[in-house]
Image (tube, rainbow, N blue to C red; front, side):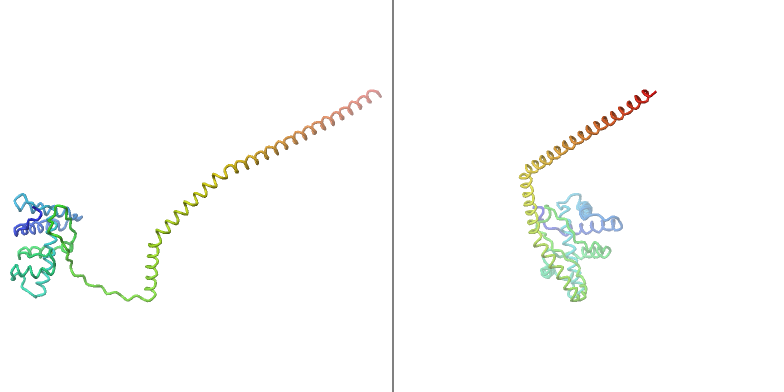
Length: 265
């Protein structure tokens, strides 16, 4: 299968050349390209150097870049330690030493190492980059384990007893919240359902009673109001009768007075 075809030394050389060319073109570009687009440009340059066509995909290019980067880190560490003259060793000897690092570390030509050394020396971000985009069409035999620069351990200041206790209580609280959160949620939901059932039961059982009471209150109100109106009408009738009687008596008095006056004359 194409995906399992070993890389030739020419293909590796074309790849590092394409990699270096794209890095030089984009070194001052902003914003930075995504890994996918970056590898796409490298792939285009690689295919051009390969004569216009190649079975290598963008995914296999990304995979091989990571292997080259890891291999460079391993070889550079050996050279800097002064243990061996790396490129003075045979390929078999190099492979035996690389077994300690893993399958993803592989021998390379010195010219490839020199290009990578120049590439990573110019761009620290390129050296630190460990992101890969390996698709389903990538090399199946190239499972990558990333190698990073050894980090300098930071000194930790000892925590005070109070700070340690506070942190322990915080962690305990967080653990309790995680363990009991679901249970409390279930209890709250069940309680809400029970409450809704009680409310529904109360509503269905008391509607008739409420309507009956409202009817009684309304009937009492209307009866009381009718009595008040009757009493008001009775008072009005009596007042009218009293007024009529009063004016009748006054009129009679006036008439009697007039009769007396005319009689005496």
